[in-house]
Image 1 (cartoon, rainbow, N blue to C red):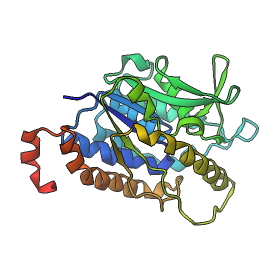
Image 2 (image 1 turned 90 degrees about the vertical axis):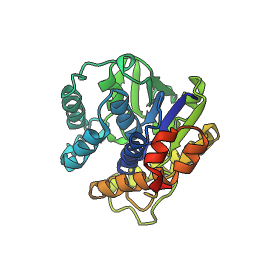
Image 3 (image 1 turned 120 degrees about the vertical axis):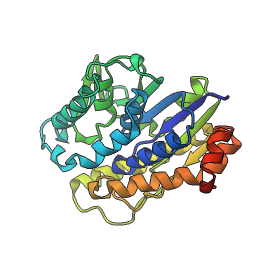
Image 4 (image 1 turned 45 degrees about the horizontal axis):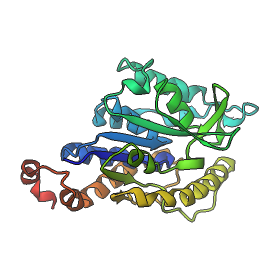
Length: 271
């Protein structure tokens, strides 16, 4: 069977559609041999790569009071300092003995992208601290304070590669599946400074993402464009949108030879 790489794009709350996609993929035993992700895509992808059950990831996402992350950090190079975000990630990883895990130790090969503000170039995390990599890839510029690592100042990889479909292809994967959650934008006017910051960077990230779509053999685009990317009240809706998009992709997954015949027979009602 062909090797399969999965690329999960950034999109804040919209990126929870990745959870829905991965739930359906697990149900159908779609193989995943390599995962790359940016921002929320990197966070979710890393947990799956570490072997954490997708239903447990979903339970955590839906039960955590995310508005509590708003630890104001003006003067720390971001509206929010990111301290609480770091602690949340650390505590969750610690439940599975992964607080000190390195990327190279994960069950599935994994890469995530950050952006170095000093050089203006992407930094691909392929080894080293999983926790630090996640903290940097989700550091939305101007909202969360950047991460200092070696001689770099790292923020969200969406600035340079929000849809890292090129990474699994360059790693030698035969097929690349992309989940793109930033293709559509709501038309509602931003209501505050945080929304202005995020909307501005999101538009830029979307334009950058399009150049990588040619690496994909299958592109899933969950319908989450109407959801403001920091609206935590829409998390369940985004997950459901991911499930719907994944089920619509089942015929193409069958064409690509990624669904076994015995699984296909058992779940034929989805076709």
